[in-house]
Length: 85
Image 1 (cartoon, helix red, strand yellow):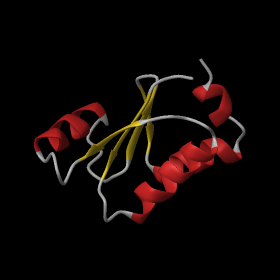
Image 2 (cartoon, rainbow, N blue to C red):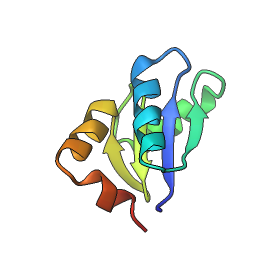
Image 3 (cartoon, rainbow, N blue to C red):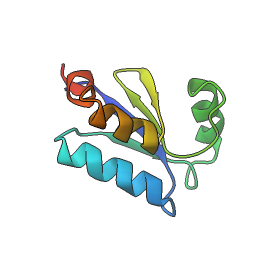
Protein backbone atom coordinates (compact mmCIF):
# COMPACT_ATOMS: atom_id res chain seq x y z
CA UNK A 1 0.00 0.00 0.00
CA UNK A 2 1.03 3.56 -0.64
CA UNK A 3 1.97 5.93 2.15
CA UNK A 4 -1.07 7.77 3.51
CA UNK A 5 -0.73 11.03 5.45
CA UNK A 6 -3.64 12.79 7.10
CA UNK A 7 -3.67 16.16 8.85
CA UNK A 8 -6.28 16.10 11.60
CA UNK A 9 -7.72 17.64 14.74
CA UNK A 10 -9.03 15.51 17.64
CA UNK A 11 -12.30 17.46 17.70
CA UNK A 12 -13.08 16.90 14.01
CA UNK A 13 -15.82 14.41 13.17
CA UNK A 14 -14.80 14.38 9.51
CA UNK A 15 -11.26 13.43 10.56
CA UNK A 16 -12.59 10.47 12.54
CA UNK A 17 -14.77 9.39 9.58
CA UNK A 18 -11.83 9.58 7.15
CA UNK A 19 -9.59 7.58 9.49
CA UNK A 20 -12.36 5.01 9.95
CA UNK A 21 -12.68 4.50 6.16
CA UNK A 22 -8.92 4.19 5.73
CA UNK A 23 -8.80 1.64 8.56
CA UNK A 24 -11.65 -0.34 6.98
CA UNK A 25 -9.64 -0.40 3.75
CA UNK A 26 -6.65 -1.80 5.65
CA UNK A 27 -4.56 1.30 4.99
CA UNK A 28 -2.10 2.41 7.61
CA UNK A 29 -1.57 6.13 7.85
CA UNK A 30 0.54 8.71 9.59
CA UNK A 31 -1.40 11.42 11.34
CA UNK A 32 -0.42 15.02 12.03
CA UNK A 33 -2.54 16.65 14.74
CA UNK A 34 -2.53 20.34 13.83
CA UNK A 35 -3.79 21.30 17.30
CA UNK A 36 -0.83 19.64 19.04
CA UNK A 37 1.54 20.77 16.28
CA UNK A 38 0.27 24.19 15.17
CA UNK A 39 3.54 24.86 13.32
CA UNK A 40 2.60 22.03 10.93
CA UNK A 41 -0.63 23.78 9.87
CA UNK A 42 1.27 26.10 7.53
CA UNK A 43 2.89 23.01 5.99
CA UNK A 44 -0.57 21.46 5.51
CA UNK A 45 -1.95 24.61 3.86
CA UNK A 46 0.99 24.77 1.46
CA UNK A 47 0.82 21.06 0.55
CA UNK A 48 -2.99 21.23 0.16
CA UNK A 49 -2.80 24.20 -2.25
CA UNK A 50 -4.43 26.54 0.25
CA UNK A 51 -6.72 23.99 1.95
CA UNK A 52 -7.18 25.21 5.51
CA UNK A 53 -9.69 22.72 6.92
CA UNK A 54 -8.99 19.29 8.34
CA UNK A 55 -8.72 16.59 7.34
CA UNK A 56 -6.32 17.04 4.46
CA UNK A 57 -5.41 13.64 3.03
CA UNK A 58 -2.42 12.64 0.92
CA UNK A 59 -2.03 9.20 -0.65
CA UNK A 60 1.36 8.42 -2.12
CA UNK A 61 2.18 12.12 -2.04
CA UNK A 62 -0.95 13.01 -4.05
CA UNK A 63 -3.38 15.43 -2.42
CA UNK A 64 -6.76 13.71 -2.24
CA UNK A 65 -8.56 16.50 -0.39
CA UNK A 66 -10.83 16.12 2.61
CA UNK A 67 -13.20 13.53 3.99
CA UNK A 68 -15.90 14.11 1.35
CA UNK A 69 -13.30 13.70 -1.40
CA UNK A 70 -12.06 10.44 0.14
CA UNK A 71 -15.58 9.01 0.35
CA UNK A 72 -16.31 10.16 -3.23
CA UNK A 73 -13.25 8.26 -4.45
CA UNK A 74 -14.50 5.18 -2.61
CA UNK A 75 -18.02 5.48 -4.09
CA UNK A 76 -16.51 5.86 -7.56
CA UNK A 77 -14.49 2.68 -7.03
CA UNK A 78 -11.17 4.52 -7.31
CA UNK A 79 -9.92 4.48 -3.72
CA UNK A 80 -8.70 0.87 -3.65
CA UNK A 81 -6.55 1.32 -6.76
CA UNK A 82 -5.16 4.61 -5.42
CA UNK A 83 -4.18 2.90 -2.16
CA UNK A 84 -2.59 -0.08 -3.95
CA UNK A 85 1.18 -0.10 -4.20
